[in-house]
Length: 405
Image (cartoon, rainbow, N blue to C red; front, side):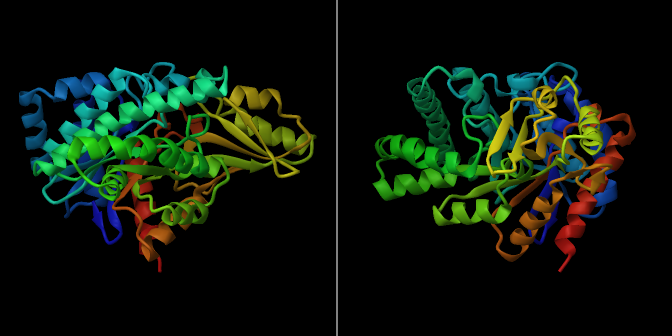
């Protein structure tokens, strides 16, 4: 929905369905009820998630025309897409396979271009559209040497530039402005602001400027501007909170380097200060243990008393080191409902959401706002509620924050 501070929606990766037929059925079931609660009299925006199979099926003319007709009838529109998970995302073990296929593969390129072609067909006239994407690859797949890492970064970046070329061609031929929104996360090849900025200048611009100059016969300055327009950051608040970076730090560094934010992905992570080893800490660990589920990665980054950090690839590894006396705080990659302030002895990083939205109100940095709590099916039983009601509550809470002076 259109707000004074950008288009607001939620990501439909919340809903199951890897085929288009199954996912469309879920959209028909839930979206009218959600729209009725949060945007009854105005068009409702959708953050569409399409698995690879669904993208192939929706690319067929008959399916696309049917979806466009449904959107018009429901007074809805698509303005952003989640292109991170390629395959199964519900009812299967996802874990690190959420990065598969990574940006070193032709499959990732073809899938992403397909999503953009669908976006160009669905996007309302005059609007820009974004597709989020993984941070190149998963770090733990490439640990042999720095040379291997550099090779992966180069190959992944070149493949991404093939997509950028298509986005420029779409825009130059009269189509909409589209941007690829790269989403850093813990243990991705890009997981924090420094790594994102370093990659952007040392790899993306370094390789991309001569590539775009040759493809489009433009100057060096024009080529850099085109890349900065078509490759932006997907700022997932949860992910940057996990690496202990405040919204102010993230946004000021991006502004300093002239880099854009394509999307503010609104999500909150679990966190807790860790008491000294003993009964109080045991209560905290027991609470984290209730969130230990087998579907998604729940990376933990622990802050130590000396200010350094300990990274655990998943919650089980952190639980195995629960009595580490040097640890002062845990933050875990488990997207929790943004409208809940605390979870017993645990809290969340939603204050970072408040700070990011406050900045958006005073110094707008993106046109797209998307709530992404995809863990409803795997939450502890006490937190599971009706899905449409839960999504509406999340969007309502965001609207309330935007309306606060």
